[in-house]
Image (tube, rainbow, N blue to C red; front, side):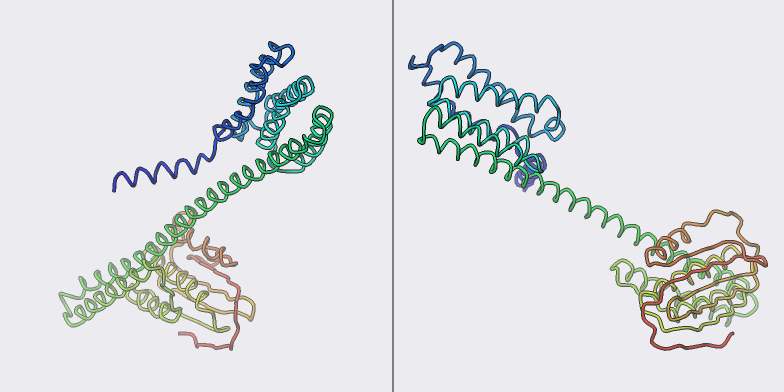
Length: 383
């Protein structure tokens, strides 16, 4: 298994790197015809031919290796080397002809590797192929039509294959980045859910435990009733955490309002709940449930209030939830992590969430969301 894992890792690393200039080096064997022409002694000025062939190979190798480096491929030096290779190829082909005409397809490989895509490719390809056709026809007649065709094919096929490979690697990198972003988004969602779930639940448990401690010496039955509530809250929290882990939790706004009433009453805060407006989609109810939960938790833990009002109203277009207490107000102007997370979630749903001091003291949280479906209107009396 270890060997297989290593082989897969190496294959993945090769895929990330992509092809290199080594993949175009074997095509230099096409230059053996020019070398044999020199060795046979039929070529005039053989030393010029040797130096020209050596310079051609050097330029070709330099170009193909630079062509596979995205940074160096676009530099003026690479274009200068390519122009030099073209001038040298035409000079050797005009001077020697015959087997030396096979250097044109090699020039096409270099051009295709450097240019690859864009409007510049046809602008360079067609004049180059036309010039190759003129030279080869002049040196070798109609028998050289294969050289012209080979030059055109070498440019276009090389450019197409390398451009496709580059696009595939970019798409693979984009896919991996999107996967990483999805994982981070899910981690953020999970951390927010756990914060909201555990923050509210633990606050209720703490408040009820304090009530038990006060009632136990005087009213054991009432204390046992609070203990039963603590057990019920704990079991419900376990269920919600399991649902949050699997990602299928959808909050019920009516249930959350009942829990908020109970938590506020247990903490000695008078709950006042008003609800009117359109029936809401489950997603909207779930998001507003988080706002109710977080706001009620903050009121129980931090406000020191004697009264907390939860007002839900709306129109056919937007729904508005306001939670206001008459407590001491925010000790710090900076919202906590729970409210920050809620603000981001509400904004992602096309709504807004504001929090801060209430006009007549205390603290206020206001959330507005668009209404996706308006079925009917309902109202509940104030409590």
